[in-house]
Length: 466
Image 1 (cartoon, helix red, strand yellow):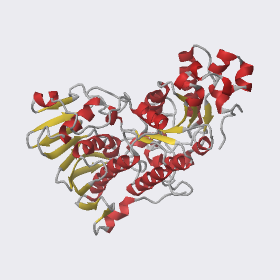
Image 2 (spheres, rainbow, N blue to C red; image 1 turned 60 degrees about the horizontal axis):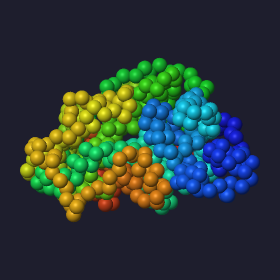
Image 3 (spheres, rainbow, N blue to C red; image 1 turned 135 degrees about the horizontal axis):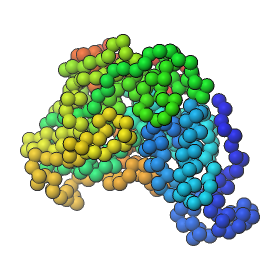
């Protein structure tokens, strides 16, 4: 793969424009070590976290890259996309931000069209992985092995087997990993889970998870592959199929891409939003590192003869080893309702939107947090009661973990467990029957048909193991 011609400057030179201004170009280049730390303090160029963005589409431009550049001890120094047009537009976006912020022209962002080349850049400390679902595990494993800290968009993987691989590799390498489950850094979701964990609604009995849905559609006409797109690598480990724009992403603009609605590349909203809500439900249930033991499907509709073939209307249920039942459906209000023996708590994003094109992202009718008794929501959680770590901003929490060598708010094993629960619900949608799951061994009980769905065949050379 070809990448845009890079400057030969070193990491220190790339980050030291401010040094040159303060003490003179010749001094900065000849004697960088004598510059007093007091000139820059904790945000000295040598202390900054250099970040590369892998994937520069809708979620990266609107959420992930801005989530990094708002923190002055991090620097977006590279962008990468398999669509060279998007990669160049990513550079324009980031260069433009730094130009506007600093009040002087900036042209320092490097451009790649192959994530492996970006990972080989030793000046890059950490990466954003904002790519389609089916490439998360593949790129994540490669990034961890390259010793890059990882912020990855959810869900953690396309299959449960993939998820186990990336969790094991990340934990073995010790890189700081944050899954993009930003509800963990949102006050009402943390507070709701703490109230439940501290018994404010009595014994928890049932959790209702409401998700949006996706309609069928998409134009199926075969089209020539754009010259700016490495389509073979974009398909990754999934089967080779003909190119059509509605299967990939828009060639003009950054509207919601078609791949989100194709089962070849994901599972639909059960992982798309389920990875958020089921993760938040696990927080309240105390099952962040476990999973359900019985899962079944009451109903599920899949489109036939349509390019976009993920699930539509559905209702699934699960029971956990602690006896709590979870019911997931697009028929419920978007959010999570915890129901106990002494009341209930409902929590949602309210009218907050990550991106304007997310279906059901904003819901002006839903309260951020509600309860059967208003007194529940004014309850003070005592110092000796259960508390989660407070994270005020999700990308910032990841960067702080890198800087201060501490755990992130959404670590890889919990990301894998939330994704696994979603995929178990998806498996029952396909089978339309009950399955029995052992969350400790991560295997089905005497069920060859379900076990075969724990992984998918992977096309060489893009397998996770490769």
